[in-house]
Image 1: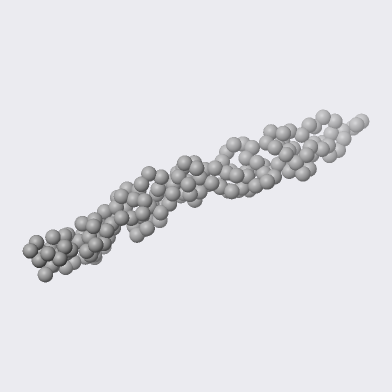
Image 2 (image 1 turned 45 degrees about the horizontal axis):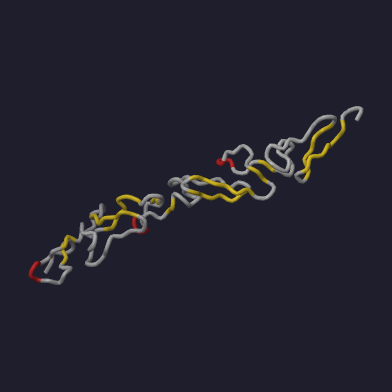
Length: 169
């Protein structure tokens, strides 16, 4: 018989005894046929640091474009750092979705603005910061400035108008 919990006779051949170390064998981690193959990760079987005799599968390295954001070895590298807007480019890097829909493309935040809003400063970190329906500096589109000659410029429903004429006009 093998000396539990570290030795295992996984090939069921009594002539070679306990041929497997159940605390380090990636194909027999803690018990025979328990393969360490965590999602999106290079994984290995290691003794449990808590002193428990049962080994566990751990993430050694995440596959390219993936991250282990929750620290739970059971689900491997669960976050797509190249496509997930809640961990875009790495753990904790959430894309701003103010007035739009956030996306993540190749590890960089992207933003699709809601109708009537624009990302006029080209800063993805503050979202779609301009209301294109009311902003006189960006009326209807980014960079469209409502003229102010002879009156007070206004932007109504994305169209420039003059709110009040100047004296004599």
